[in-house]
Image (cartoon, rainbow, N blue to C red):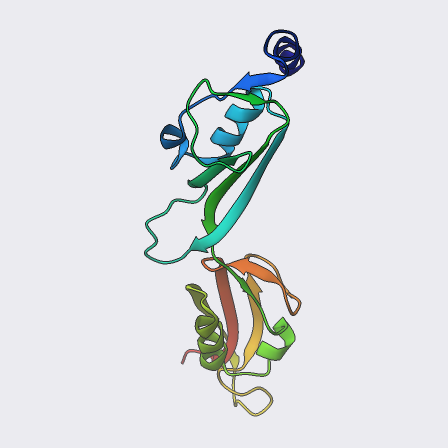
Length: 180
């Protein structure tokens, strides 16, 4: 309702133009949802957010940190500039790197747990944990170290081409001998 009033005011007094809510250098580096809401609350009608999935170990960026704001093709603007309410506002921001799995959970169950862990690490995953199932007596039916189950972010099983953030928790459960 408040948004409708702001748009109506813009139509009546400014020829469908709205004042930009801040200088570009004050908005760069802020949180993307905060910046998007600032434009939406100012009555802009075409606000888009686009993630740059580049955050990985040691990144200097924060999740959601705004990299650039482009209003009608321009990345330079000042607070109070009058812009048509329906001008496209594109906000690009940093997000965690995502990894697409080239295999399903079933293919990892054919491996030794170390091999499965190495495979996931080579893809770029960083939070891989091993959980032994101490159920073997002779090791004839199931070999020592055989993967029973791999859970990614609480999901099991997972399909080929599933996408996860690089730092999702992965638990590899494997068979090993009972403690003596």
